[in-house]
Image 1 (cartoon, rainbow, N blue to C red):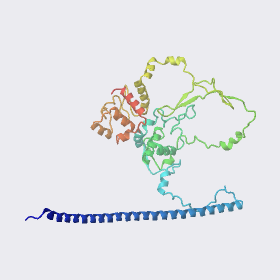
Image 2 (image 1 turned 90 degrees about the vertical axis):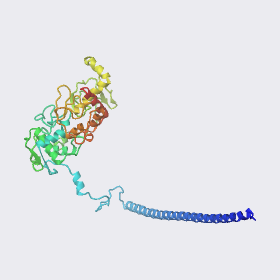
Image 3 (image 1 turned 45 degrees about the vertical axis):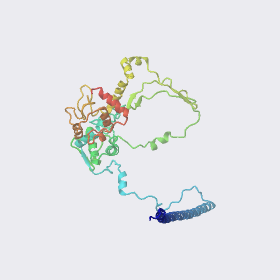
Amino acid sequence: MLKSLSHVFLPVFGGTALVLAVAVSFANRNYGHSKIEILETRIGQVEAHAAVAQENAEAESKRAAELEIKVEEIQAAAAERVANGANLTTTAPFREGSLGLGRSALKEEIAAWDVDVLPDGRGLPVGSGDVWTGEEVFVARCASCHGEFAEGADNWPVLAGGFDTLADEDPVKTVGSYWPHLSTAWDYISRSMPFGEAGTLTADETYAIVAYILYSNDLVDDDFELNNENFAEFKMYNMDGFVVDVRPETEYTEWRKEPCMENCKAETAVTMRSVFLVETPAEGGSNSVMNNASPDELPTFSAEGPSFIPTAAPKPDEEAAAIPAAQETEVTDEVTELAAAGEKVFKKCKSCHQIGEGAKHSTGPALNGVIGANAGSVEGFKYSKAMQASAEAGLVWTDEEMAAFLAKPKEYMKGTRMSFAGLRKQDDIEALIIYLKTFGS
């Protein structure tokens, strides 16, 4: 006879329930242990933080107490000095020894700053350079501003010539005609040249450049070599053209007296203008021009100030009429304006490059048709290895490539012989490219 189902399932369910109860009990127990461990860890961290905070507070309290004692000592010392009649604003007494600040300069650090060169040759580094080497370095690093023969490019300084002009109304002061000491040239070139790349010349290159400048002034022969041993022996052309200024002792005392402040004029007037004006063109340098303005209607001055501020005189009708109508049209033409601006910028390139009808190769190639042409493709010019490699790589002088090159030539093309540092203004670069396009592309 079969047993009842209740007799079969009830024991089974009862055993399962017991197992589940035991499992839940163990789980609860493990959870409780984990919770306790976490709380104990947090308590330990809080206690550690509290201990650190307590230590910091004690240290700050100790420092504050020390400062209070120091303040009291200073106040007591000041009170004692006042009681003894001392002046609190007098200079502090000198104390032997250092103040414990900084350190002594190293010999290498002193040597890096001690670069000045004196007329007797003191301060010169060991080195040498001949005229022919100097010509190569000068053409590569200096000619873009000073011309290949030191004759000056545009308004940049002339370095050669000008002899026997110092007594003229407009003297030409060059290294050869004016400078009394050769050390001035060496020191300045070493510190400040080339323009935009100061400090990049080696000692030998500097000796060579100075030797070439002397040769350009016909002061030495083409086989001359300048070095630190014969430097002080060289005598400049105008070395005796300067005298010690003794006017403070011999003249100033004759007319330097207390100013008279009685019977002063109520009003003073400007009666003439300067003969020459010094202009600063946009491309740099300076230009001395005649001042054609008349002294008419100049202001007078009194204690109340100038009688009026003069305005610019209108351009005479005859000058305005002399301006061609075509020029007025060009002013309104944006492209033509850019080309005209580019022509001014090109003055910085003229010492090495020619452009236009009859242009020939110089230090650099002629630039007719350069925009859009393949790099290094002008016949008859010997390009640098860097330019030849760019040409083999397929470089084409598009507007974008030319703009990048003109901005920083030496970064754009490593190893280029072009010594020009680059154009800083984007407007100048764009204008120059427009100008180059007017000669073909």
